[in-house]
Image (cartoon, rainbow, N blue to C red; front, side):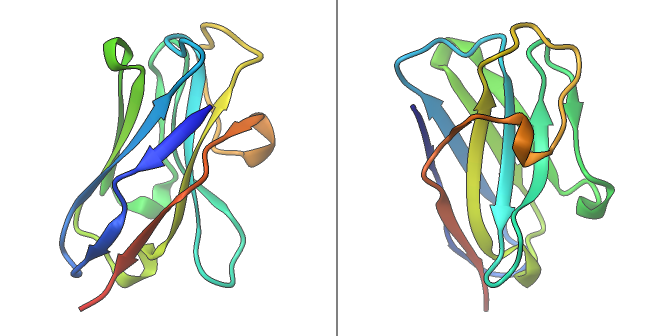
Length: 125
């Protein structure tokens, strides 16, 4: 089970750190992805980290988001800086539990079979 948290209301230019905590399994070497679904739009990937720690971001994020993992806490984080109103969305974390120690990751929904419940991020003045 995955639990995403840390969402909330933030002003443009602000920052938030989302957490994705795993329970019931040890996800040290699994691929973890963060996705978001803006209101009325399709879900899109924002970051992923492979089982071996390789990271990928879509170019569209302009380097504003940073994914990291703390294996001791069984938690993956998404640090979001310089937030914009278009970042408003429900943010989800997901895990691919079918591959251990992957070298690469992809921000493609179909690659992940285990999903958290989502946390709302609203960027507004």
